[in-house]
Length: 195
Image (cartoon, rainbow, N blue to C red; front, side):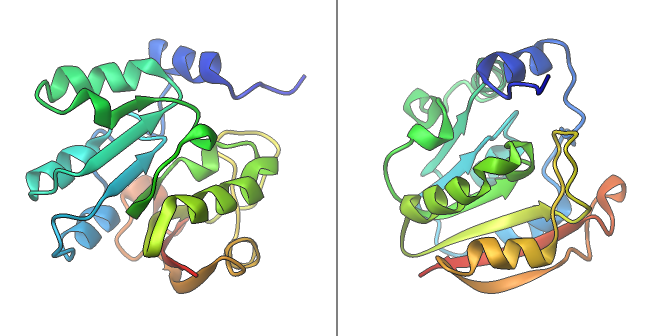
């Protein structure tokens, strides 16, 4: 029987501390990209944020218009405990596919690979609909063979090109040279611009 990757599934993973994807801090490729962003007023979304270490880093760099969304309540609670003055309205407990609004920048970090593979086209369309004109989707995608066992589910550069090229200009899609050790040679850094 196939696992239902629903709210209960993700909440249970957090409650049981089965969060192998959680690096405990922002990973180097994301940190180094964020360091280059000059416009601190960008409206930023972190979907499937988990414990949201990327949020902490954005805030430390002076960004304030950052929204995080997660299917599970526990990681949002963890963020609220860790950053008590962070606006509650920017912590959204929701299904990503039900989100509204537009964002200038969306960060992808272990969210895409956690979705059932049959949702990938829907993900690409939803990301496109959430981005403002000239908005960017950036982050990391896993680069290992797609499996039926997951999450995480794998994928390949070729698959991502096929999936995103219709709605996005592919600015960058290459093996991350600065991955954290457990993910070395297994992830692609990307920047996609909404068409």
